[in-house]
Every structure is written in C-alpha cells, then in structure tokens.
Length: 472
Image (tube, rainbow, N blue to C red):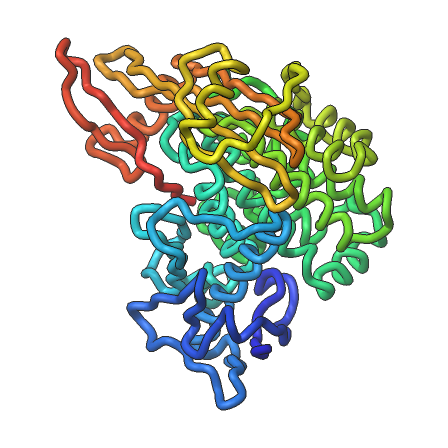
C-alpha cells in the first residue's frame, strides 16, 4: 500500500488526512493502469523510497496526488458496485487527470481527449487560490461523467435536457458515494447532524470551497450559500422542456446543473432512508451505489428519463436485495415528484446466451416494437446480461436545423436467461429541438464546445450533432 495525504472531502470541510491506496494502482509517478496524471505546469510527483506520496497542500504536487486518488477511488467504488471492470468511452484503458489545466473557475471531462481538466482561480473572499482538483467532490463529480460516459456513451450525443441533467446528477451522486466511503467523513456527518440527515452536512453540500468562492464572485448577497449545490432542496420533477432554459439558482430551470438537483434530492433522500433503516452510513452508501449502478446499467442506451431510472432502481432492489428497500426508494422518489415507471415484462427465457450481436438481434426483434439494431451486449458482474439496441432518424427541428435523434431499447436477463427488465424510450424530437436551441442560443456567434454543424442536407437544412463533451 502507498500512503498519501489528501483532503477526504473538500478543503473547507476538514484538514488534510493520511490515506492509503494500492501501489499497483498509483505507481511510482501517479501512473496506474486505469488513471494517470498529466500536468503541463508542474513536474509530476514521484513516490518516495517506500512508495508513498506525502506532499502537503503548500506543494502543487499535492494537487496531483489529490486528483489521482479521488478519481481512482471513485472508479474503484463503481467497479465494486458493478462487480466488473468498467470501460471508458474513449480508446485506451487510462483516464487522464489534469490537476493544473489553467486559470479559470471550471472543471470538466472531455471524451475526445480521454481526460479530466481542473482549473484554478484566485478568490478575494477566501484570500487564497482555489484549486478545483483539491476538492474530492469536484474530482469525483468529473470522474462520474467519465464513468457514465463509458456505461452509456450515447447519452453524450443528445441535446435532450433530461439526459444532460442526469449526467450532472450522476456526477453529484458519485461525489456523495465517495464521501460516504470514507470513515472520517461518516464521523463528520454524524457529528454535524446528530444522526438526522435532514440537517445540512458535508454529504448534502456539494463543492463547498468552489461554491463559496464562485458565489461571492457574482456579488449577489442573496446568493452567498457556502456550497455549489445542496441535495437538501425542495425541487420536484416538472417536464424540463416546459421550464426556462436557465434562471436564478434558487429556481428550477432546464439547465442541466439546475435540473440535476431533482434527481440528487431523490438520491440523497434514498441514502438518508437507507441510513435510518440500517443505522450504518457505510452500508447506506454501499446499497445506494449498488442500486444506482445496476439501475443505470438497465435503462435505455440513448436517453435518460428519471421515471425509467427510478423504475430500474426499484427492479435492481428486487434483484439484489429481494425488494427490502422498495419503501425507502418509493418515498424518496415520491418526495421529488418522480414517477417510478416499469414496462411490463413478458415471460421469456432464451435457450442460450447470445454469443455476439448477430445472435442478440432476434431477441430485440421478438421482444421489441421492431426496427432496433443490436449495438452492445453487456455482462454485469452480478450475472445479469443487458442487450442494447438503437434506431435513429434525422428529424427537422425548425429554424432550418435538423438532428439525428436516436431511440433506445434495453433488455436485461438474469443468469438463467430469464427476461427481468425491459425499457424502450421515447425518441422525443421536440425535446431534442429544445435542447439544441438552448446550446445554440448560448453561443449564437460561433460553435460552442458541445455541438458542431456537420453538413447541409438536400433541402438546405443544417444537420447539427452534439459532441460528447461535458463542461461543468
């Protein structure tokens, strides 16, 4: 094991603490088989003679260690939930982590580079430089984007508001799960709340230092909360297409970082309910992580719908825990106004597991509405097999624009070949058009990072595609 010094959650939450990580994962130069640091400003840290990285925050190499450890441990959590190695959406096995990407109040994941980038800025309110890579919340959130991109790569290609919001929500859920995985954080949560998770605490608050600094930069005294987001919010589900594209932080809008809070409210309440049921914060995190991961695994490959995700988590609870947490889940989703949708599952067993996409295709043809082409066969470490199919069409979205809108289908089978879950999503051309207009309106003078104009169609319509980039 390698000894490391890191913040266990956020620089504004607690002091630097010592932790450990497998030497096989961190290596001698912050280069592991799944995660590695890149840095264009600071020479990369080296382990000492015992394989340890014991830098303090006064040394910029600490940022490298903090970012590496937070990212690797987030990946470890989700691979533990899935009971298998999880793929990245980009070529290669290694996610790049850049702790000093440049000056700015930002951090993001970018598939095209297979990397996370963390920026820094000077805060007058704090009297110091804010380095986003020092926050386990921020790093885990961005790593969550990379993990979800590997699980559901087509989520990155749609303009759909709800799907983009789920990407942000999944990142926040990843940060919550990393927080709960550390004993020091669990002790701090209990000390802060007395065991009542309805009180604000370091689990409910997201990105304390970053949020504190950014909110004071906007010079709005009504917007000076000491966090970026809180999962103890009162937001309830409303069709995001009916909401304004953006708005004040205290109101719900269709902007992804705003609408994600509907889901994170439900997930936080799920964790709180699991804790009340078991009295064990660590177990609550483990169960919540298992349900979130398998639920996400089973939904449509092309589009996230909170209602289908909620239904999939309920099915995951039946499969993993015999349904013993269904009351907790239903109460949490009901408070957030999220309906739990599950499609009827026909009584069906395959004669033998499909060896390839050609053998999977007849299952989609027989069990679906038709027209879906088999894209992936995913084998979960719990013994479940998910077959994903996609069909797409070019849809005119008005104002001389068009987009390729995909529809997804997902079939989940248990180890005996019994069909246990089925999802066919709504292609929603209207939602695609609204989301496309959001992004093009925000950058009317040129191509923003998240979309590109591909070509002119025969009737003069411009075909626009979304790039799989997530900027936070």
